[in-house]
Length: 183
Image (cartoon, rainbow, N blue to C red):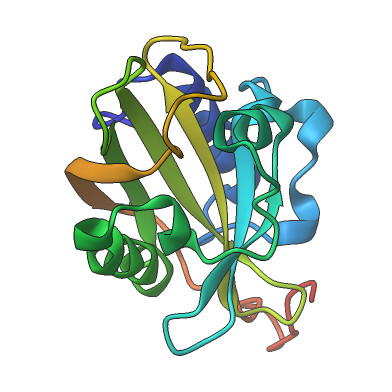
C-alpha cells in the first residue's frame, strides 16, 4: 500500500488484505464487488491463460468509457504502447508468481490531457486453486473527458514495483488433518 498514491487503489488493497487474512491471496469467488469501496467502474479482473497470455476477464464501465471499447477478452498488453508491453507482461507474471502486490504508474503514450494513471494488481486464486487471476484497478490522477478526436488510450510505464505479500502462509492445505482448503 505504501507505493500506491491513488486513494482508490489504496482502498482496493485494504479490501484485498481483508479478504486474504493470513493466506497468500484470496479466492476469486470471495471477491464481492458490492463490498469494494473503491471506484468499481475502474476495476478489472485478469486471467492468466498460460505462456504469457493474460487477458481481461472483466472491466468496469469507466474503463470501457476511457478506452472507447470493451476490454473483455483483450490481452493486458493491448492497452500498452509497443515499448511497454513486455514490461507489463512481466509485472503481471511476477504479481502472480511471487505472489505480490503489483503497482504501475502509467503515462499516456500521446500528449493529450489526463496523462498520469495508477494501476494496482492483486493476485487471486481461481476456482481450481491456482494463482491465475488478478483483481486490479486503473485510476487516473486527473479526470479527463475522452473526446472522439483523441487518439486511442495507450500507456507507457513511468514506474512499477512489486511488494511481496507479508506474513502469508501457504493456504493450499489446512494445517490440521491435511484437509484441502475450500476449492
